Length: 509
Image 1 (tube, one colour):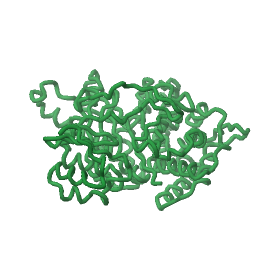
Image 2 (tube, rainbow, N blue to C red; image 1 turned 30 degrees about the horizontal axis):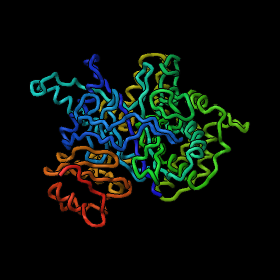
Image 3 (tube, rainbow, N blue to C red; image 1 turned 90 degrees about the vertical axis):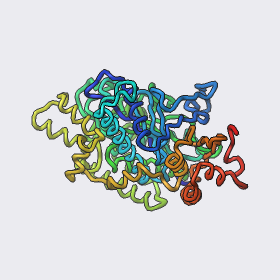
Image 4 (cartoon, rainbow, N blue to C red; image 1 turned 120 degrees about the vertical axis):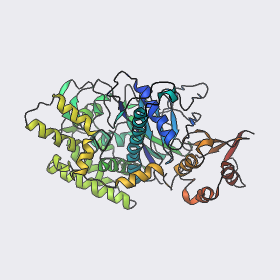
C-alpha cells in the first residue's frame, strides 16, 4: 500500500521587544495574519471525526459528549486550511503547521519545509502591520514583531512537539509494531536528532546531547502527548477509513531544519513499518529498558554507548541501526535513495560523527559549538545556549542553519523555489489536492474542514463532502473539475452525481 505520511510542527514563538505578551495571543495573530494575506479561508475546524483519546490498545477516554464548535479567529484556537492542503492553527501556546498528506518521504520532507515558509510569511505580515501602526483598524494594539523557532524546548523545562504520522493497515498487530519500532525509535536519533545544549528537562546539567526531546519521555507506550509521554504513542485516530487503516502518531522525533534529517526520518520509519507489515521479525532487538536507553543514547554524542538487549547483548546505536537497515527492502526509487543515504550516514557517523555536519542537524550544531568551546567558552555559557536557539531560527536572514547553507557548509536536497511552490500548491496524488484547491479557489465558501471532510456554503445550502479516501481526490481524478469550475456550486454538482452516492451530504437546504 502507499504509505501516506505527514508532519505536525509546533513552533516556538517569542516577541523580543514585548516579552510580556502572551504566546497564545501572538500565535493567534500569526495564523490570522497569514489567512488574511493568502486564502482568506479562516474556516473553523470540524472536530466530528477527532478522537484523540481513543487508544490502539482497545479503549477510548472520550473527551467530548458533543462536538465542539470553535470560531476560526478565536484567541488560542485560530485555524486556517492553506492552499497547499495543510492546516495552520494555534495549539496551546504555539503556532502549529500540520503538513498535507504526502505519498512518500521525499514529498513529505518538502511539505514539512513549506511550513517554515508559511510561518515566515506570517511573521513578515505581522512586522509590516506593526510598522504601519494601523491599530485603529484593529481596535486593539497591533501584534509586536515575532520570532519563530523550529525547536522543541523553551529552556525552562517545557517541551513542545514535532510529530510524524504514518498510515498503516488495520490488520497490523499494534503490539507487534510497537515492539519492532521501539528500539528503532530509541536509536534513530543519532541520525535525526536536532541537538540540544543542556541535559535534563530544565537543562540543569551543562552538556550537549543529540536529541531535543529525549529527556521528556517516561514510558514505552502511552496515549499522552504532553505528560507521561510514551516513546510509542498509542492514539488510534486514523483520519481515514477506520475499518481499513490506522495512523502511527509519532511524537518522539525532533523538529529538524536539515532536509537530510527530515527525509531520512520519514523514509527510514516508513521502511521499518513496511518491513513489519511484510512479516519481518524484529523481536530479537527488544531492549531491557527503552526509556533509560533513549536518554543514554542522546547523552552520548561520541556514539560509544551500548544499549542493553533482553537477550544479553549490548549494541551501539550505530549497530542497531545497521541491523534495521539490513532488514528493510526498497519498493521504489525513493526507498532506494533512503537506503543508500541511510548507509552512507551510518558509515560517516562511525568514522567521525562530525563528518556529517554538512547534512545532519545535531552534528552541524555540535560542530559550531565545539569551535566556541575550543576558544575557551564553557558548555554552560549563555553564548553557547544562544547558538542552540539561533540555529533553529527559521528566518533565513537570522538563522545559523541558513547561514551554513549559504556558505556551502550545509547541504540541501531541494531548492528554496521548490519549497516556496509547495507552500502554495498541494500534493497532486493525495486528497490534500482537493482540500488545498477548495481553499485556494473558493475559500470564502468554506465553513469548516477536517482531514476527512470539507463543509461548504453555496448560499442556499450547506454541503459536507467526505474525503475519507486518502489516495482519492487527486489531480488525476478531479483536476478537471477545478479547471472548469467557476463557482463552488459547479464543484458540488460535479461531485454529486450517480456513482458518488453519499459523497456529498446536504446539511441545510
